[in-house]
Image 1 (cartoon, rainbow, N blue to C red):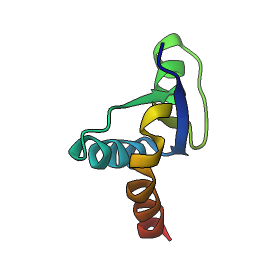
Image 2 (cartoon, rainbow, N blue to C red):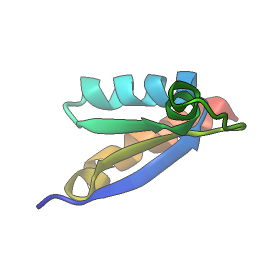
Image 3 (cartoon, rainbow, N blue to C red):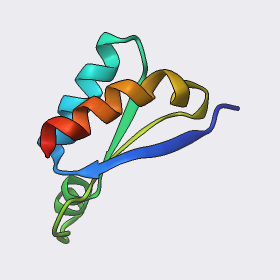
Length: 74
């Protein structure tokens, strides 16, 4: 079984942007959006509530992409 690790927490827009960059490099990712899940379930969540996960085995391949993405945000 492959394990996921969290590599980013932030807004949905930024998490989706990073997911797109990883996808271009053929690195699969998964976004957990607790704000949207809460809205659909009838209760709210505030703040940066989107989390992006990748497979632990892709961690090394993704580091440069993630670091460059975080530098863009600064």
